Length: 241
Length: 63
Image (tube, rainbow over all chains, first blue to last red; front, side, top):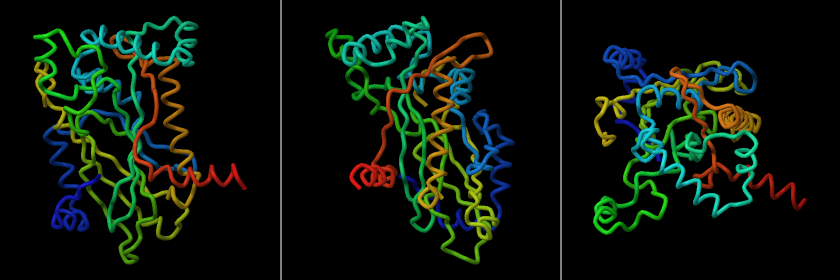
């Protein structure tokens, strides 16, 4: 689900004032340091997206891997990851992953289980927009009381934590966004920008280039910016942002 | 876009899958020498974005 910002803010973007907003974010060091890749080959020419590998590098560099490891860093999460894979192997003993692990000798504690998440939301003029992201399979849990109960009764530690205690802003990492249709329901509008508050941890901004009006087969240019203030926290502080 | 040109949809998944396959096989190498291996266990989400693919599959299977 995508929530639009206010009408006035959208109007502001339509008037081309987005550059100023971006500059304010940049001046205050509010962008999350993730490398954005631009595709060069058709049919995704000029398509901006974030490689999951680059996002993992940034998460590691910023000590934020807890967002995909249920709030733990890589060292703390080692027993949790090993326990996850033990249970997963019990559930899926024939999974091709085990052959791959056996053949390559990978350390399972360094293998981070994750899911891809595809979601189609509503964008400008009720047009569809596809949002692709990834998230950790190990979540923050489903109840705030579970940890207290676990500590007191040594119970409830048998399952794999679900991911209900944190919002999508904190647990889903953006890969790309893509409009479903050419958003040209206002023909006279040849260049506009839409800012959306997505179900992830960042605001992303789409530029619809005027060239798509002239050549609809060309891909609409999408620019992504990542204000990282949701992630921002002092090093060493708990992951409760 | 992807509803009008299926190549966009396919290519989007292709580049993401290729990157994640490389991450799973070769790992993500960090600056300090640490290596992690993201393992994708599945794709989740609502159905709507998969509907065109689903109908294509049904069409190819039964007609």
